[in-house]
Image (cartoon, rainbow, N blue to C red):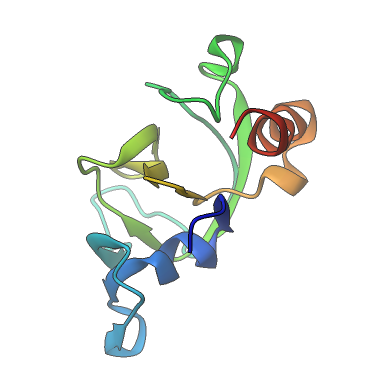
Length: 129
């Protein structure tokens, strides 16, 4: 597959190598495990549903003015930070909000539900990648 591909939410998780959800072997595009949120000292609601900021943005998917913008998440599983991380967020711990390898891009958040910031990300994918 050579054309640009964008995975959203579960799409990010499916592009990884393994998910703790039902001990699932995934596509393996990213050599990364998907982990379930674990209880912390401060109780966290899981699934995580809500708005979080994204930071440490790199690559063509993000404009610089998107740094610390809010985007919308709905998930119980996440990919840890890794060499393919192009955006980070924090919910109980810091993890990958977006990853990229070659022509494969993925966001843990939902750009289609993330207002103007999400529109910019989708437009960048369509026009710059």
